[in-house]
Image 1: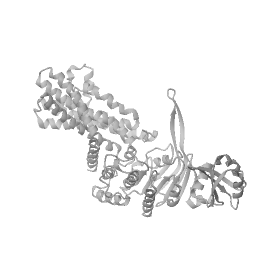
Image 2 (image 1 turned 135 degrees about the vertical axis):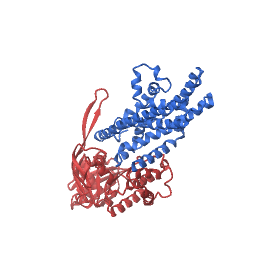
Image 3 (image 1 turned 90 degrees about the vertical axis):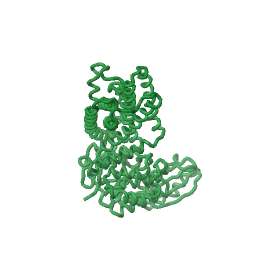
Image 4 (image 1 turned 180 degrees about the vertical axis):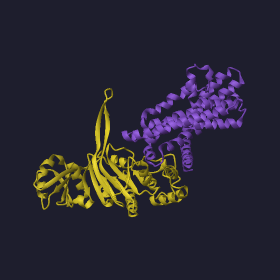
Length: 322
Length: 256
């Protein structure tokens, strides 16, 4: 039986406009999404800002009521059996918030032990074990207000695991933390999954999703536009290759011309500090590099490279199509 | 047992949190002292020692109410700002159980203000701190702080759904001082005010503390204070569940 079952889930927000004559407008944040996550799986929800990832997670962890559709976690309905769901899940989000700044890390963990009904005798050993796991042992008596962002994030992870949840929801957990901290976080998440914890992860970082996720759903505009393993998603664009050209000048003006070249399936421009990167996706067996370079005649070029498509290429294409 | 432990631990951690800002601590003592000083000057003109003790007790109780009324209504807004409100709602513990200890901790801080106000009266104005029934006085003061904490809980839950409800605390602070007989005996207030006063736990709490100080029978007032506060807590409990569901429906939990 799947651990998470989502069926035609929808969520509409009422947005208000105007000061005196207020008007109400319904905004559909999630538009009838369906997916399932199996036990011990690490499932990723990828999507741009405002795609509906956090809204989906908040419905699954019972913080938001769905407008329609249904969702079950470990067989419990997220609306009718909210308490049962809450007892069995953990929720960790990224950023600085979500901790009591004036309390020590230890007191924060003690408090959440109480809220999650961890038996008093188990609290001490469990907190010690988690402090070791997240690398905060020895710093737990310091007030959280003095913690770095990375330390806060690690404390968040410890908090989310206090009651040994069967399912862990991670909403952009690595946002704003340094590369070393992010790598440690990925190792921690991978270790959890290896012990049987089911994880639903949202992230903006493609390499993170590629490295960790067993399956991924790409969500855009409130709807799931693709679902599969990272390899399956990459296959959607891997019948060709990607040409990257460093451009010193206005590459944007040439995009339409490049797109018109036979064999080109997609073009994107990434802005850099001193240059732009023209990313050209091509179809199978298409040799477009000479034609692209001819189109850019008169523009100062830097590095030109050809590579295999990545998950990010697949993601960009899927989101653009949506 | 688990519930009592949860309340105890949460109360202690909330108290710890609220006691850690020396600025807030000083403010919660100095602010009521200004009002107490005015009261001591006014009642000092009367020349009656009993009136002065009654005023000192009333002024001390004002500090307890101030400590609860303004902070209770802003407490959930604070939880919102630091991103912990969603975590409280998302935990399996009944939401009201997470808020009640927080507002009781505010009443506990109010007790500190009560002690300081009485000491101020003694040191600066020579008002004696010799109460007729010291034990009953302590019981009455503790019940008052606990009961006002429960009233604060009702205030606090309003802001789960309505973000602007924090203003209720400021709105109620002074009228309750007046209506509930903190400084002016109820018998001097207009007839139509009295039924309102009888519905408010602070009325009974202040009467109990005053009776204990001056030698009256404080126990009926202590009981009425506790019972009426429990009724407020019951209303707050029912309201909290509805307001949390409404906030989950309208997606206002994360909004600041």
